[in-house]
Every structure is written in C-alpha cells, then in structure tokens.
Length: 415
Ligand code: ADP
Ligand code: ASP
Ligand code: MG
Image (cartoon, rainbow, N blue to C red; front, side, top):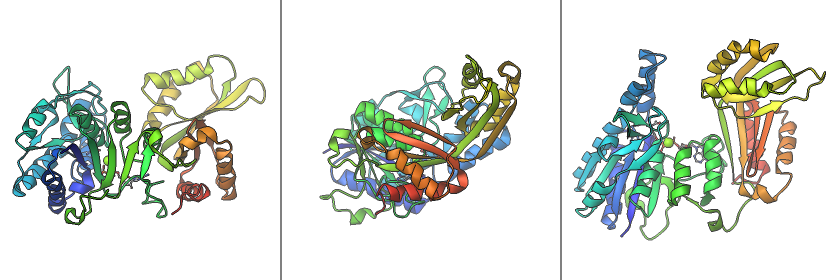
C-alpha cells in the first residue's frame, strides 16, 4: 500500500465524460489498496474566462477580489469529481484551500504556500476516504482571504500536498504522456524523456515549457518528492498495474544513467525587448535604469550592453516579460531626465529559445554550434545569455518554430 497524490489538469477534467474517466483512474489506485489525495485544476478554459471577466470589470483590479473570482473554477471541478467518485462507489469529499487549510503568503495572484495541514485527510484515509482538493488556491495566513498561486499553480498545490502528507509519489496527469525534449505540439519529432533531472526540469519550466509550474519543481527538489508526469487520457481499464506506465520521472541527477549533453529545448514568446539608446557611458547608469524597474517589481532577464564606440555614450538592451512591457516603458519614460538617454525603443515581437542540459557543464562549444546553425537559417540573434546548464537566444518571434526545430535536430533530439 502506498500513499499517492494524483493531480489532474484542466483538459483532463474538461467535461463530465473526462471527469468520469478521471474518477476511474482514481478508483484504479484505490482498488490497488492505495491512499489517495487528488488535486484538480479548473475545467479547461474556465480560469481564462474568469481572468477575462476580472479584466473587463476593472482593468487595474484589486488582486484580492481577482483571487476570489479565479479560485472558483477549482471548486466546481473538485465538487464534480467527488460526485463522480461517489457514483463509482468510492468514499470521497472535496476540500477547498481554506478548509484544510493551505496557508499562503499575502502576495495575491502569485502567493507562495507557507504551510499545509494534511492531518484531517490523512485521518480519513483510515476510512478509505479519498480527498479531492482544489488546486491553485489557498488562504492568506495573515488575513484569511482566498489566494491563488499564479497560473499553472495546481502543479504546485499537488507537490506541496505530497510533501505535507509524505506521499510516496506525486503523479501529474495531463494531456501529454510525459515531459518531451521540447513541446510536442510544436515539434512532432520531440521525444518523451523517461527521466529528467530536477535542475533541468527547473530550467525547462522557467524558460517556457508549461508542462509543470516552476514552483512545483522547486518544491519537489527541496522536499524530495518523486514527480511522475503521465497521461490522463489512457483508459484506466487498459493499464497493466504490474508494468510501469509511459511517463517521465523527475529525479535526482545521479539517478540518470545515460546523461545526454542536451536534454531539451524551451521557448517563450512572452518576452519584450527594450533598448535604451545613447546613455552616458559612466558609473551608475545601469543602476539608474534597473533600479526603478526593480522598484516596480519588473523582472529584467537578458541584458546586453554595447561597448561604447565614442567613449561617451552606449546602448543598453534587455528583456522583460511581455505583460510588463508597457509598464517598463512608462517607468523608463519618467526617469529619462535622470538617466539622460537619447531614445527608447522596444518590441514585443521577440522570442527566447533556450537549450538545456546538465551535460553542458563538461562540454565546451555547445552554444557555438547553435549560433552557426541559426545563422545557416538566416535567423538573427538579438541577445544571448548563458549559464552552467543552459543558454538562451533572443530572436524575432516569427522564427521561433524554425529555430526550435533546427536546434532540436542539431542536438540529435529528433525521434
Ligand atoms: P494541464 O492543464 O494538465 O496542467 P498544461 O497545458 O498546463 O496542462 O501543460 C501541458 C502542456 O505543456 C502540453 O499540452 C504541451 O503542449 C506543453 N508543453 C510544453 N513543453 C512541453 C514539454 N517539453 N513536454 C511536454 N509538454 C510540454
Ligand atoms: N486553473 C489554473 C490555471 O489555469 C491552475 C492550473 O490549471 O494549474 O492557471
Ligand atoms: Mg498546467
């Protein structure tokens, strides 16, 4: 007997038929003798619609009320799944974040989990009751108000609950049967990985692969939760309980026997590029530019500063999330006088393509191969960043798919 967390994403609970299929997956594990806590997302499209309603009601909205609205999607799916389980003859009840509780920080719309009380659901395992928990939401410890964990946050709820109840495994059921070398919807030749190291998954997730929320991978790494990504679309009846199902295990680096140099490629079109032209080339200028952006809680990512040609002025280019583009331009517009630049340019038609692999630590020249291959396709690189196990290039958004496919073949990732 094992204790399991099973998480089902939005597409997996998109309608009543799919919720019934999910209920039969849960029943399969309960029948095998396991103790099960289920975490659900809102039905596909629901959260997007709720977010849109908030925007329509108030463009600059109070995030406490935004959370009150967007957390509701998960309440519907949790209740429906509990009903579907009861119909299958399984004892089940739904739990909202505040009922356990799942206590979070006060950062509405992107709250962090502080503490989870799993005592009651563990107690009820004795009576073979399944807990169906709303993903994505919690309650602010200080104020008692409903909070949400940021888009894709149900993954984080699931891993945090697995850690809290000391589950043997956290199974993430989604609309693909594992983590692939890149998004399989963009590159049909992408290969499923049997295993991927936490560090690599962390980079993939933070650089654009939305299969797992970044924070869920961080938590898994810290609390040593075994995370297994698999498909919810399989028919429960077809699964052989004695064989390992298709899927991807997120694990420690040491557990991967055959380490490739490059493991995967991520991309993100949610980027914007800003160039500050002809800024005085003197100490303190970078601080004058990035200070006000930091104060406005804008995350600056890639930074390129040209060597000044005339010894007097230089250009500084950097990226911010596309959603912060206008705000960044406004912030920099206001401090034009103190910085003393000549011109501010920007574009949201850019994309960041990133190549990830632990093997890069011990192999030189991996990035150089990419630059050559991209040049061969006439793809211009606007900015580059590198770190120990990844490098990223900023390119025109129109070339994203071509660049990803080119690099995917280059590093021998095609199936
Ligand atoms: P869920 O609703 O189950 O949480 P998401 O839509 O959040 O599902 O995440 C699954 C999606 O992530 C897949 O449909 C796929 O298009 C996308 N994805 C991006 N990169 C990858 C990758 N490297 N491997 C697998 N899926 C990926
Ligand atoms: N329903 C939330 C969202 O769409 C959380 C999740 O799906 O993980 O972002
Ligand atoms: Mg998701």
